[in-house]
Amino acid sequence: MEEQLYAAVISDALDTAGFREQALQYTIRPLLPETVVVGRAMPVLCLDVYEIPDEPYQQEIAAVDSLKQDDVLICSTNGSTRICFWGELLSTAAQARGARGAVIDGFIRDVRKIMQMRFSIFTTGISPVDSNGRGEVVAYNVPIECGGVMVNPGDIVFGDADGVVIIPQAVETEIIAAALEKVSGENRTRNALREGATLREVFDKYGIL
Image 1 (tube, rainbow, N blue to C red):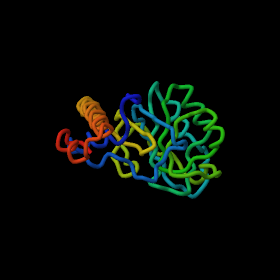
Image 2 (cartoon, rainbow, N blue to C red; image 1 turned 90 degrees about the vertical axis):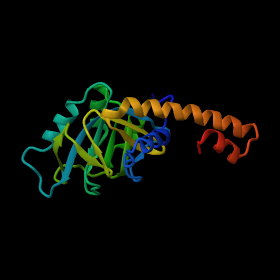
Image 3 (cartoon, rainbow, N blue to C red; image 1 turned 45 degrees about the vertical axis):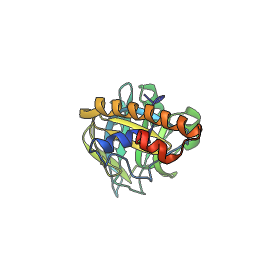
């Protein structure tokens, strides 16, 4: 799927089908510009806290340990700038369990080590601080809102340099088929433009821009 499709064409297919709010907010960016991630959503909800708990990290550990092959952990912190939820050790654990990557509506750390691992990460920012006493996972594998989009367990997460889109599981077959069809149309459009056709001629013929 990642070899044939890209976030923009999936977003277009979702728009056409009436799902016009499926792109996560623009501040959630790939750690590396060449990053592509595709997998099943495993949503996590992490909230600000203001005291150090007696037993920190409990739900965070459980969430990462619950990851399955081809999952993408997608975490909402409600845009917090206090919580540095993700780091190298969590990346190592997730990668070992077969997870495809992580999408974090919040900060991450240990970025040099994560980049060396080539683990696919999307994030709003980077900070060296620990999550202990700043944020706590309160639920996982439940519906969440992340980056302005409702995400359910099992939805398809697709992210690349343009951003992250969510394909609802209930319509994934039709959306993927429509996106592949548009890719074919874009290829025909591109070829015609390269051969010298005007943009108007090509748009009138293929209806793609």
